[in-house]
Length: 158
Image (cartoon, rainbow, N blue to C red; front, side, top):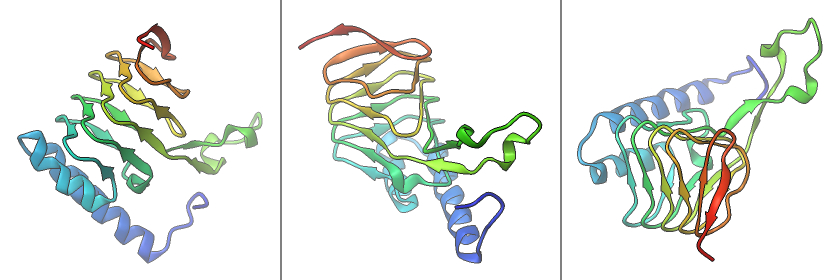
């Protein structure tokens, strides 16, 4: 979607997404939240839990794919869009750069620690653990622990 170019359909979809995601954040327990996330377009596998106050990108929740038995803990941010800074120039407002969208895939059995930020285009491997407060900007392999900003693998179980 080009910057500042919105159709009635896009606006209505945005309102629906914000409504579903906003309600989901308030519900307890975690299993009760999933139907609202799914109504907004998030793909969530069986046995997965999304903690309270998780921020899911309201502009493209359909780009988020969460596998089976995944735990996304409190305060995590899942972002599917960012500014395309390849077009950025000195003196040009950053807001004039178009948004680029990319999916987030969290594979089966992964665990995302409190307050982590997952950036667009990232795949988190099966059984991977992301430490609290980490910023994930690149793919994380299966069965490892990744921490930091940007997140780096500190231990592999394979």
